[in-house]
Structure formats: C-alpha cells, structure tokens
Image 1 (tube, rainbow, N blue to C red):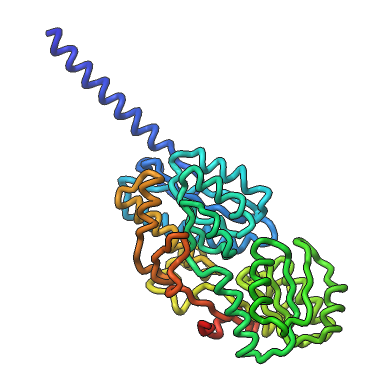
Image 2 (image 1 turned 180 degrees about the vertical axis):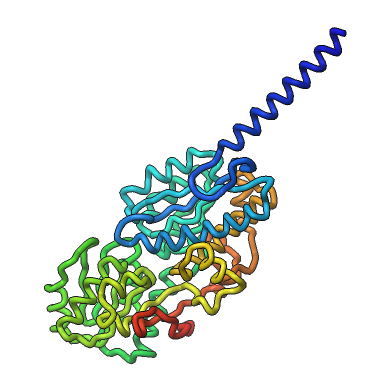
Length: 386
C-alpha cells in the first residue's frame, strides 16, 4: 500500500509541475503578436519609431514584421512566437535603454531593426554584445557594417549603393549641371549626402545643413535660389523635407527636388501639399509593390487596411528569416545567429545571402527611383548599376 501511495502522489506532483510550467509558459506573452495558451516564450522584436515626426516609416516596418509573425503563428499553434515592440521615436538618445531591455530578456532571440541609422549606431553594440541577432530592413549607413558587430545583418543595399545611384540618376537621367546638396547631420542623412557629393564632384555648387525638427527654411531657400541649381538633393527625413519643399516651391523654384528613402513617405506629399510635391523624386533600395513576390501586398492590406509602405516588405523578409531559424530549432541566440549567417533563400523582395560583415550580397541590391505623380509616390525606374 505504501509504495503504491507514493507512486500516486508522485504522479500527482509531476502533473502539478507540468501544469504549473504550462501556465507559466502561457503567461510569457509580450505586447504584439502571439497566442496566450500556446506561446513557447520565444520572441523577436521590432525596434524603431512608432511615435514622432517620422513614425510612419517605423510603423511600416513594425506592420511588416507583425504580419510575418501572425502568419507563422497561424501555422505553429503548438509553439507560437511573440513580437516585442520597442518605440525609439527615431531618436538615438532613446535607443540605448531599449536595447538594454531587449538584451536582458533572454527570450528575445532577434530584432527586426533598428529602423534608423542613428539609433542603430548606439543600439547595435548593446544588442550584439548580448548575442541578439540583428536584421535591419532599413538602416542604410555603410559604417554600421564596419564595426565588427558579430550579430549585425542588413537586408538591403546601403548608402554606398544608394548615394552613387542617386548621383547617376541626377547626371544621366536629369542631365543636371548644377546640384545643391542639403543634409540633416544625422548618421543617415549626412552619410547619404556625402556619398552623393563624392560621386557628383564639381557639379555640386553648394551644400548646407538643416536641423532636425526645423520648420523655417527661408534663409536656406534664399541661398539655394541664388545658386540657381537644376537639382536639390536632400539627405534626411520627410519631417523636414515637407516644409522645406513647400517653402522652396512658394518662391517659384523649379529645381528638381530629390531625397533618399527617408523622404519616401506620403507624409512628404501631405506636408508639402500635392502641388508642391508634384515631380519630387525619391531614391530607395526598396522594391516597388508590383515587383514583390507572392501574396504579400494583398495579405498586408488585409491585415492593416493599407498598402505596404516603405520597407514593409523588407521587414516581412527580415522577420521571416528569424522565424525560419526558430522553426528549424535554433532557439538560442548563438544558434540563430549561425543560422542567419549561413542563410540563403528567396524572400518577397530579393534573394538573401549575407556576407561576413552582415551586408547582403551585392548581386541582390537594387536601387529604384520613385516620383510623385498626381499626389502619389509611384516607381519610375530601377537605376542602372554603375
């Protein structure tokens, strides 16, 4: 009798432990996607701006990553992955504590982001030191790949591709003789503008720096009009680009306005006004919607009520690479990083294969020119490689 009683109690105790463990697992959810009763506790994170003047760029990325997680969870009800969201506001000042929080959460295996180059510069070393796998779908400053961060990966071309491509477009397509270059002194904006200036050389007749959150561009517009350029290149974001373009056009300037991927957002058109924004050009190492593989555009619109925005598809690809690694059993940071380092596969935007420094294979890089036409940003052409 006694041995039997012990066995019964032992079985009850084991059952209680299992139930407790299951309950603990079901309570491991974080904000974002994931099911309550079948969450294994594994997480990936979005890191970028969900608030502030350039929030839409971050929202596009968050929503692309969220769609990938939701689709994964729909097929893996026995072991779902949750999406943690970290809103940086796009500010490098806010990034370090957010990176530390992710680094300290051992269930966070990888990050889609950081979204902007400035926040990446200060967050990536923290994440990499902790072994958190980084795949940014949008931070394009070339220097990010030169820091020796072991977990850094970039899922698109950098500004050493975009800047010269923009310069070739200015020279070969627009046939510009005189170019004025403006940047916002950010890691992204200055880096991109410097690449453009380096490629254009003597065609640059002037350059200037604007401030983040600047709204009065009267003095700058006066200097630009005095130089009489054919083209104005802006390295920065749409928050400043919109009022700058609006004030430029109010003086009657006909110079072509070109910005990089940081201004490729409907916020530029809405802020500058449809008439002022007409004909504005944006370059971007991102794929037009009609070039995206599979059902992603329709799936994204069904999930969000919107068409994919800038870097939504690239974020979807980045998240899916992380999820494929988790699905294959790489559920530690080191194993997931090894998986991503060796990963080769076709995404909805391009074919992925990472080099030793985390950059995507140059053969997979494409830079497109987009233009505002009738108040809409539409693809114009893929810029030929130099």
